[in-house]
Amino acid sequence: MTIGVSTVTATPTSGPFDHSYQAYAKLLSAHVIDQRINYAKLVDAQTSLTTIIESIAAVSDEDFQQWSEHQQLAYWINAYNLFTLKAIVDHYPIKGSWLSWYPRNSIRQIKGVFDVMPWDAAGRIVTLDQIEHEILRPTFKQPLIHFAINCAALSCPPLSPQPYRSETLIEQLVTSTRQALAQDAWLKIEEETLRVTAILNWFGEDFTTEYAHGVTANSSYRDRAILGLIARYGPPAAQAIARVPNTRIRFLTYDWSLNDVTDTGRQ
Image (tube, rainbow, N blue to C red; front, side, top):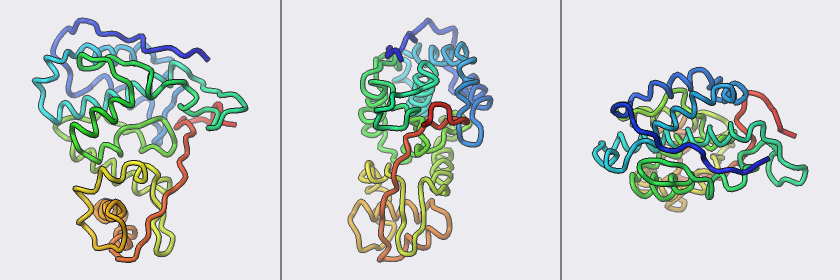
């Protein structure tokens, strides 16, 4: 497998940036199936995918700074998800060696995909890690982005079948959060214990300001935030348990297998 860098560079824009993301919406509708991605079909649509990413790359810093906060946040979420799709397509089918530590079809088989592979966006060169940890989290301080950005793994939140758009952004983030927490891969009830996604173990501190005061629990500040999040957005049964003071939080094993409609490469 060759490890390359993004070959998508900025091209002159032919008009204002399309904040409705119509071309991206069409791409998603054709390739997101039951919360998974038809990557084999997406490979055949590489021209469309590249054109969409070129429109992301063509946004200058000057233009970007004129946008509203919700326009900027929607842009970075969509950019992250698009770049992830392109990274997978460029290396599909992913088949790691027999000595791989991770599932053989995992995005983690792509060397440097998160911290080295560069992408052009908003007048700068960024990696996926930089988008997540240096832009999205510290700049916007919106913890529900963890339910929106998709890293192409089964344990990631499902890729939304619609682009994130500024005018409906908060509603979409809430919907994505509810949909993720309704899945066994993200939340399971075991008597007085809630077993939740490892993402909330890694980034639980991001939720403390908004959600830690939503419940009364005999637990850490971070765990109270997780319980508060579930009490607000989880399924009814989980909401009820999250409000019980002695409820415990435990974390699920993260499945890095590719979120493909097939099991190609999974051994």
